[in-house]
Amino acid sequence: MGAEYAAQLLAELADAHLATEDADGRFSLHDLLRAYAAEHSHAGSETNRQEAVHRILDHYLHSAYAAVRVLSPWRSPISLDPAVPGVAAEHPADQDKALAWFDAEHRVLLAATAAAEEEGYDGHAWQLPWTLAVFLDRRGHWNDYTATQHTALKAARRLGNRDGQAQAHQYLGHAYVALGRHDLAHSHLSQALAWYGELDDQPGEARMHLDISTVLARQGRYREAITHDQEGLRLFRAAGQEHGVARALNSLGWDLAHLDDHGPQAIGHCQEALRLLRGLGDRYGQSAASHSLGYANYRAGYYDEAAACYQDTLDLLDVSHDSYHVAETLTSLGDCHRAAGKTAAAREAWERALAILDEMQHPDAESLRGKLGQLAPPFPDDFAG
Image (cartoon, rainbow, N blue to C red):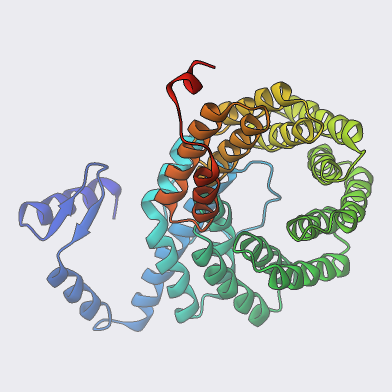
């Protein structure tokens, strides 16, 4: 069935009020038609049904893979089996279109992951969660992130796929860091590190050292975190991965900034990371390095420089692409303004951050609400400065 013929059939269903077309040209079926289709799918040949399931899963896997490669081009790729005949995958042209595709297909991709597990398509059951990881993280869908990666881990174990298991442990670690479940995060990241060691995958080991550093930093264990930063930096340099080197320098600068009397080192590492990422054209990486540089300057008492870095971070980020990190940066900008005695500017930044966090229903909203409550009430003269 060609795309034109499918479009014709959908138009006929819409004319008969059995399907509804939304503004983006997507169709949803009437409940009666959906029930009929589900019943009919089991009435025919099991072979035909399985072939249809395979085509659907291949369509979503190959489309999601193409979209995430646009959304996160620096991520290490995985190998997919060729799609079965008759599958036409989507290929978003840019990051905006890739993100819009994930937004539109988010729930369908979760359902496809569950269907892959239920129908015994273990390759799809670990690879679909891989394609979803970046989107779910940036959108703050961390419960979906953990659920899909647990599905991936079970599927990779059934397949005996060591690389799949390593990656599932890695992304479970990421999700649990975001959820503040540090013990679980450390456990999964340590398991991923062990797997990458067995696979003799130096870049994989380096990534895990940086991820473990993130967990330790969230726990305030910065000196331990720095040890992992340094090991990650060594491994990335040995592997000749400039992008990884930049990530490691940024992480090292961030952790050093939290220790007294390491301001110049922290600033230097973050500046070098930012220089490398600019050369590589990685705007998302630049936003992270610019944020770290802002914090290093903030800790050193250079509030104007810090505020400029945070503003650069906001310019590099897009609230529609990464709502949480925009809110995080606005919170940091407010901290900087408060330290500089600019109460009105601090209030404005924090209120913008709070609006985003409230919309996301993120737990960070409560602590930020508390910070706003501690500010003195605004006075007209406050806004003149």
